[in-house]
Image 1 (spheres, protein in one colour):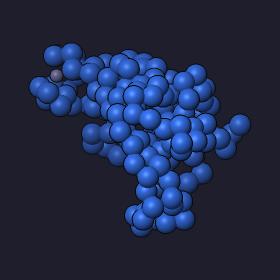
Image 2 (cartoon, rainbow, N blue to C red):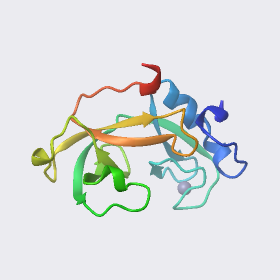
Image 3 (cartoon, rainbow, N blue to C red):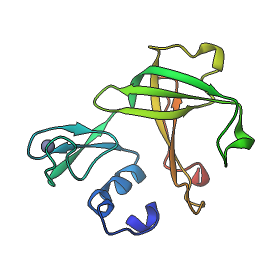
Image 4 (spheres, rainbow, N blue to C red):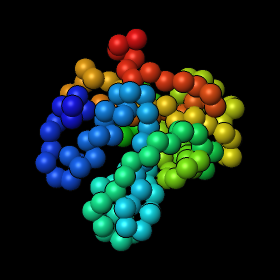
Amino acid sequence: MFEWFGKVNFCPYTKVSEFASHLKDGRLMASRCGKCGYESFPLRADCAKCLAGEFELFEISGRGTLHTHTRIDAAPAGFEDMAPFTIGVVDLEETGRLLAWFGESIPEPEIAIGMPLQVVPRIFEELEEIKLYYSLEKPGTSWVKSPSTE
Ligand SMILES: [Zn+2]
């Protein structure tokens, strides 16, 4: 099933390959260290706090609040065609912080620090390199596993 998510890699990502199957089922997962309980999203196979290698996955809602945002006018290589665009950093309700694009449900004038957001995974199985990114949408926005299979 890891093939579905991209290239097969033997260290350490195979330890978290279960993330892909949950994502395919429409569930966003984070990790909890089996030794110290440290929670992380994106999930980690090896604990960032105590370096233990055992962990469990738990589902997160994807809900969060906007920590900060910026508009990109001079885009980095590969993204020139998309500029200008706005990205934001969201503090997730359960754990973690995520950088993502703003989706179409939120017009730029409505963007405000502290606003509630929903992280929505966007999965593109047909691309060679970029398989998954996240967009920031209005609370309550639901998501499907892949726009290409709608
Ligand atoms: Zn730990």
